[in-house]
Image (tube, rainbow over all chains, first blue to last red; front, side):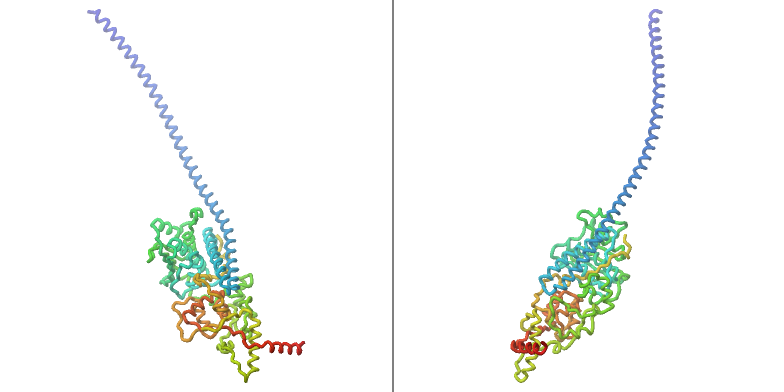
Length: 414
Length: 124
């Protein structure tokens, strides 16, 4: 019985030995793996730590880059604005100069309807050009230009009307006995012009745009109503943001073609202290824009009756500012004819004209009864008994008409 | 930003002439010539809500005859613009017009020559 047991035992022993060996080997492997694992973990932790450090550095760099980028952008924007402002300032000056020249020409050649109409077309184009230049100047932090005198609210509205393309669609209703103080005259006119430009551009051609002037407890409202399609909520939000600017507006954010009406309005309103809103609906279904001029920017002072800049003498000398002051102080030294190119026949009234002058320096003719002002217009009856007197009168009239080559009137009418 | 003191002065006129005319066509110069005299017709009420220019014309013309040129001069407007406003008032029946002194019709050339000769003889 021992025989058969022998091999089994041996086999068991061998198996046991093999097993022990295997276990020992596995354990050795295990230990080795564990050690490796620990090493790897350590390595990983080190790498993770390194990564975190890098992350922090990266974030720091990113932040620095973005602040530097913003700074560079701001610098670039400011430099662009400074260059634009300087360039536009020249344009503004030229537009104003040209306007004065055109006005002068309008008064000089005003008697010819054809020439006057052409000059008016030039004036119209130039006014729009001037408004555009003013808009860019405002966006670049520049100024509009200052008026010397106050202007009635009605005239501010009409001045704004003259600065847009489709001025003939605009109606101004209502007059109040208030004037806008001189420093706010141009800003209010420019803002109103921008609102009118929007109103006429975003409504059907031919539809009217109304300006209603209303006195309210806190000032005067200029209400612009159009009959367009109105604005969507998104547009209204954008407009509201531009109309109450929190920060300087970037020129490049205005799109191509740039839409700077609201941006200009917002900046001017904030700078001069009046309010602009476009969030209501007009009775015609379009947009209702409201400019509220507060009491601080209003005065009851009446604007000068005949604006001195519009007086004919104003057109003659080249330095308007200086001249204006002179005009107020000293009346015109000599009664220059109103319209030099067309000599007037009523030389007889000239001595009278020296007596008084208007505020604008114009010679003021004394009002007379019609009989004394002109010779009778009836056909001259030949009076044989007073032939001498009649002929003397005829002689006087004859020489007068000989000097006057423009008198081509037909018979009298009423 | 420029300081307010650096602000340039604007010297151009404020209300443009084409706004005053409302962009309408201008009347012919023959219609109301420079020397045509105008005045307000008696007992007229001013039109409702007159523009400042119409108001000024009303005041100017209420005292007696003034020529178109004078009205334009006092208003500081081009003659064509004043003419249009006067034409409006005329069409509404507010104005009386009287044409300028007519060219004399009784001028005798012979008398003129005699006077000229007389003057030449007397004053060389």
